[in-house]
Length: 330
Image (cartoon, rainbow, N blue to C red; front, side, top):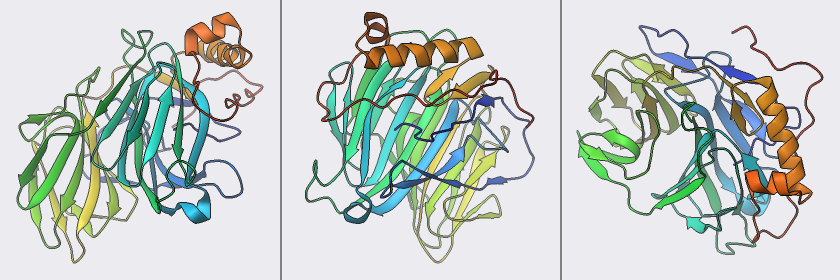
């Protein structure tokens, strides 16, 4: 998924100081373009916190009636320096990319695209693609690639069956990293974890986690308390490294949530639009080369490639602000 904001702000992502209590991060609504646009709820990056482990971006969308909204229709657009992690609760999305990948994702499956130095892709969850589809509902996360890997080769993985385990009545689907003694086959470039948590009403779950990780728990729906703190629906609860378990308590309604976490990311990264870079100059170069790719110029196509199966034009990059991209006060 792309960031379709017409005036995207730069985000200098830093590993913030840990807290001894649960920190709550409120989502902000971001429309994905057009008068019938889907609206996503974005919790990362935020003013409070820009990274949880390597996770630098979290969009949560739906349940969205695509007959009313038009669904997800994102033209070919670029990424660099990151991985896109797509996970659905309802519906289907067709992914196509510059590697020639053509993959429909369904709930309980993972689409993982590693941009490396550059890639482009499209995403469609529309009635035109899926006439029987009623609703679309899920999350997309991005991970920042470490400096040693961010200029590497592009790649795409689809994991149709992610590992699952049960604990204290809860069902846990691990789609990135290791948790509860099971490991996702998806490739990660830093120590991290991501999983869907389904907790029955009234259940009390002691979830064992890596104490070296910081964690975020995004509540999709239900009544959830995390280590004694009530979490509003669609908000993100942050926990600093330290404890070896997280206490999750469901109230009268069953809970569905997404856990993400990892070792605090030791590098400062500059995010602008769909690029995770380190410097202003790298943003300028990536934007110019994407515009060159749209025009069919060899240098741009060599970096980002082409999507050949999408019926429509690629998405142009937004205009750059007339100032140097630099860190802002937290």
